[in-house]
View (cartoon, rainbow, N blue to C red):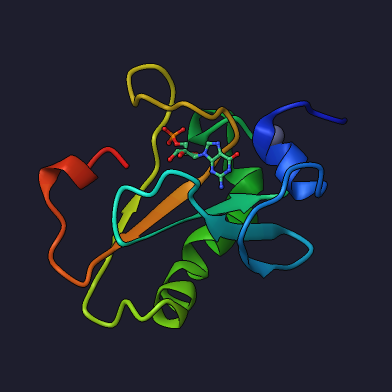
Length: 117
Ligand code: 5GP
Ligand code: ZN
């Protein structure tokens, strides 16, 4: 099913993004409004709204989002740590309703202002 959400449009190449990684299942790209010196997003190509919209049948895909985080963080030079955030729904202050993992990094330790995203 074709979705009009902004991240589905990035997946389809209808909106440009600074891509870091792409395969058949997932896409990683730099956040357009970074909250830290390094801030990128890892998303499934499948449109899932958030983790509330996912179940165990999505375990391989959700696992892949997290499984790639370290490799991509290493590629970005985040050798001394980084933060991973997933905002879910209104209470989680999610803005884009297509599941995404935020990866934020230094060089300096992050503050509480980087907690949300
Ligand atoms: P959320 O609050 O939903 O967890 O975060 C959504 C993130 O997507 C925000 O950090 C925002 O800057 C980013 N974002 C929104 N629209 C675009 C876009 O068109 N391109 C890119 N690269 N990032 C976007
Ligand atoms: Zn989508």
